[in-house]
Image 1 (cartoon, rainbow over the protein chains, first blue to last red):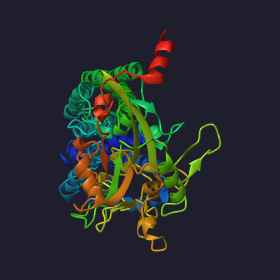
Image 2 (spheres, rainbow over the protein chains, first blue to last red):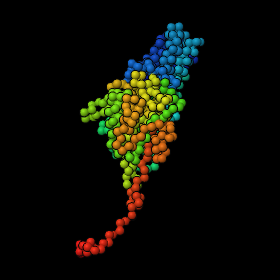
Image 3 (cartoon, rainbow over the protein chains, first blue to last red):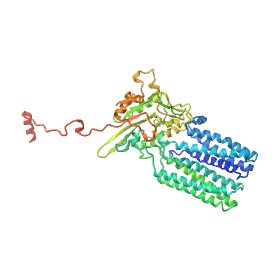
Image 4 (cartoon, chains in turn brown, blue):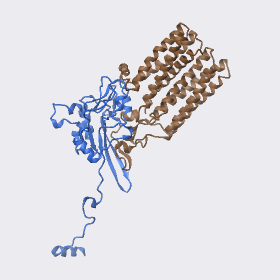
Amino acid sequence: MHPAFSVIFFTTCSGAGYGLLAMMGIWGAAGMLPSERWMGLAGLLFALTLVTVGLLASTFHLGRPERAWRAMTQWRSSWLAREGVMAVLTYIPAALFGLGWVWFEDTTGLWAVAGVVSAILAWLTVICTAKIYHSLRPIHQWHNDWTVPSYLLLSIMSGAVLMSVLVHLFGAENPYIQGLTVVTLALGWGLKTLYWGFNKRSSGLPTVNSAIGIDAAGDVSVLELPHTSDNYLMKEMGYKVAQKHADKLRTISHVTGFALPLVFSALAMFIDGYAALAAVVLAWGLCSLGIIVERWLFFAEAKHTVNLYYGATKV
Amino acid sequence: MTSLPSHTNKKLGLVIDLDTCVGCHACATNCKSWNSGGHSAPLTDYDPYGPQPDGVWFNRVHSFEVKRGDRPNLTINFPRSCLHCDNAECVTVCPTGASYKRSEDGIVLVNTDKCIGCKLCSWACPYGAREFDADEGVMKKCTLCIDRIYNENLDPEDRQPACVLACPTSARHFGDLNDPESKVSQLTAARHGRDLMPELGYKPTNKYLPPRARKIDSADIGAPEELEPFEADGFLGWLDKVLSK
């Protein structure tokens, strides 16, 4: 599949924003964060900015962005519509939680409930995003059991890495918060490794024989294409990435997205002051880069069944 | 509404004969011609006279070669268009309600006034039936010539999809696949018509008839295995003897 910049930017940026919003909601409601105005403002503003910028970016790839509001109407059948509905709903408890924290400097009681609800809605939004990809049966690399957990955990992980930066900036370090960052990095790394392993080992059921309806006749190869230059299908769904480049990028993602952030996040638990802040900032920067590479691979390595009509032997 | 109808009264669709299709592209060009002025018009072209011509088509004709061991290779010409699936997930993924499947005849259509051009339906189609019109910013697809098949301004024999009318070898057949008595249903039953990628569960309406077994030996068509030498007498016998010296 064509790795469109707007969609990579949307899923990584909004994913991190929802992850941070959920962290703010959960840790805030649990009383693990100072209910101090500036911390709340910085954290929630940054989370909601990431979410909003990502959502706006996702409309840039539409052919008719001015009609984007229509995308919320078909929530009964469409995961994309459900995502839109959940994304909008999430703003309501997030705004209430922000009101309590920033205006009243209170994250307890009903304000805490708003925090937990924002976290749940944030996670549900990310799950809806993942379900958009997971529900597409023509794309084996997405239509498998690893897609939804990977998206959710990587969102939580991106949020946790950001949360670490925030608590270090505001001097609110806490071994539980930093510990969770380390744990989510380790789990995210493990899950993504399993996702990549699954897609390396397996491919989709359809073959060119079943695609043209002559199951048992023999080896089928392309004799002639229907058109002389690339059409929409080939540009949108025929994206090919050389295996050696994909492997190199995967190594970059392993190292910058997971391994190094894990090392720096763990290191931050044993040091303090500016050194610890530097470590968590470095972990965040590297992790962001690694996750963008991971997301690029998620699209570039996805093989749509339409490629069977254009010479692919498996998808 | 992008939920699928629980049942459709008719299942209008095509039956395509891979045995007789000669790969002439007449169906594709007549489709382009009709639909450039039809329900989903325009069928935009980009750079049509330049080095990289591209554009929106509802029907594409591929050609494949099948290697079959000792037997001669087989050429398959394969026209690919919307199969108007029962379980059309291109419809259910649509977030706006622009994509829909008609309960009266099963035809899958796009309302281009509601389409936001998110392209998700084209991702959900295993067969590559939908093509995006970058000029208009909306998705387009085969309408089964909805503006021909119900068109009372046309003669009854012309109320068929443009691709069917254009086919010089009668490899394309149009009808109701829900009616077991229809010509298309009978043809499908007689020739063991296939679903494409049945393993994905889209339950396509259109069927493809696989090529018949090729007759490659003389015995297959009832001719003698070998020809007997001609024994002549009289003048021809004398001539044969003289010329054979």
